[in-house]
Amino acid sequence: MKWISTTAILAVITALLTWTVSSLIEKNRTLNANLKASERKVATLRTLNDMAAEMDTRHTGKLKDEKGKNNQLRTDINAGVKRVYITAKCPNSPTARTGSVGDDTLVELSRTSGSAIPDIRDGIISDRAKIDYLQDYIKKMRPFCKIPQ
Image 1 (cartoon, rainbow, N blue to C red):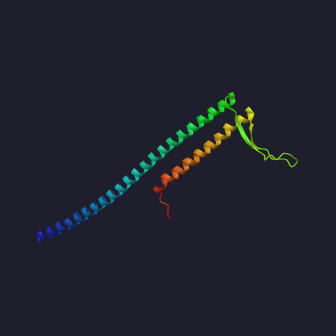
Image 2: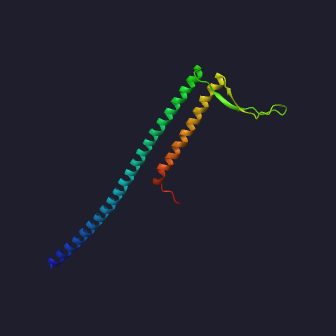
């Protein structure tokens, strides 16, 4: 009789151990799957970070070059090396007797007015650089975004 109860106890212990091991194996599989998914996400984030850093470097370099050219233009205008002209049309007055057509003519701006042009260009350069950066960012990063269609 003792061997029957010993066998029954061993059977119960074996069943419990089998169930515990099976449960642990399943948890291990789940954790491994989660780990692989996390590793893929980390790799994707690293790729995105590298792409963003490369875009930032490229666009910052372009902006620096353009601002350098603009600063040189500002220096040249202030020193009198370069002059700023605008093209203007002179419309015909109704009392004009000649048959002219109102040709374009160049008007030179004063140094004070001309020195404002690089400031205006600086704003345009900055705005254009921001737009270029954002367009590039959207083109490169959109494939990684989960946007429902």
